Every structure is written in structure tokens, then in C-alpha cells.
Image (tube, rainbow, N blue to C red):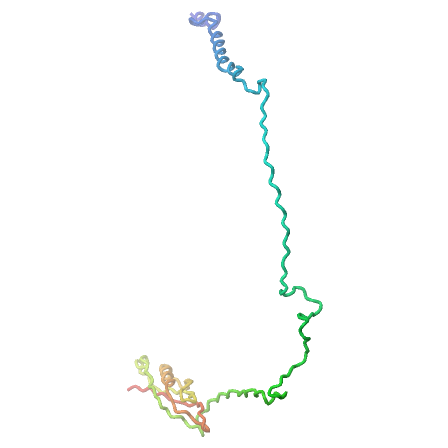
Length: 232
């Protein structure tokens, strides 16, 4: 039994199944012939050969390039026009006369004659006299020959609410500068009551006085005024 099982291997000359020994070579030859007919014959056929293998003379196509356009004619460079009225850019070495037809310039003063006389002092008006502005008059302190001006406008000071609540009263002494027109131009506190000073200054700056005269001229003066705050 084992010998018959491996008989195909030990005896290859025995055919496998019903196939003959020449079946495989015949199949290869037939397939090769089909490949040659389908591929090789169309390539080697003379009717479809490229023309390069033909004996006919090749036809050459000649092309002619268009002629290049002629070069443009060179234009002459125009010369720049020079304006004779322009100022020169180079300093001249000498001074020349612009117009030779004009008379030469004489470097000497020309004095005209007005009214038949060459003396102009009595013809020309004298220069105006410049008057220096008067210096401001320093304020004079009231006393001696300087009388105190009379107050013609009075403004009562407003009692500050905080001072009323704190029950504060007193006298504020102020030094006031009164201008020549009788108006107060400056004021400063000499004796202070802290909560009442500003109210006193605001009232004094609105007061007006009669002008103070000195030799018939109104002058500014400095005087001391008092503002009293009293609780009713």
C-alpha cells in the first residue's frame, strides 16, 4: 500500500490523470503564436511602418522670419533756452553797467530845493515831542495832612453760617488801599477772626469812598477799616 501511494513521486513517467505528456508544451506553443500574431505582426507590417523607414525623399518646410523694423531715427537733443532775465549763478569779476545809455551814478547826496531855498530846516516840521507817561503815584497813608476819605457806599458783610452755629463774634481789622477814584483796589487782614475774615474782605472790597485830594489832584491812600460781627 505505501509503495502504491508514493508511486507517482517515484515514477514521474506515469501520466497524471488523463492528460498526456505533450499537453503542456502544446499549450505554450499555441499561446506564444497568439501573442506573436496580436503584437509582433502589427508592428512589423509594412503598411503601418513609420515614414522614416520609407524610401521617399523627406519634405522640408522652410520658414522665413520677418525683417526687424528699422531703428528709429535719433532726434537731435534740443538746446536749453537761456532766459536773459534770470539771476546769474556765478559771481561776476567786475561790475558792468546794465544800460550804457543811462548816465553814470554819482555817489553824493542830492538836496532838493523847496520854495526856492536850499535850507530845509524852516520847511520841515519839527519832530513831535515825546512826553513820558507820568509815573504812578504811590499810595499815601492817611494821617497828618492826608485826610480820611468818606465812605459813600457800604455793603454789610454776610455772617457765616458756621460762625453763627459756633456763636463766634468779634472785630476784623483790615488795611484797605483806596484808588484815586475812591474804589478799594486791595485789602488785607491785620487782625483776624478765623471764621469771619473772608466775609469781612468780601464786604470791604465792595465799599466806595470819596476821592482823596492832594494839591488838587486825586491820589490813592491806605487806611485801616474795621468790620464788626455781633450776635443779636
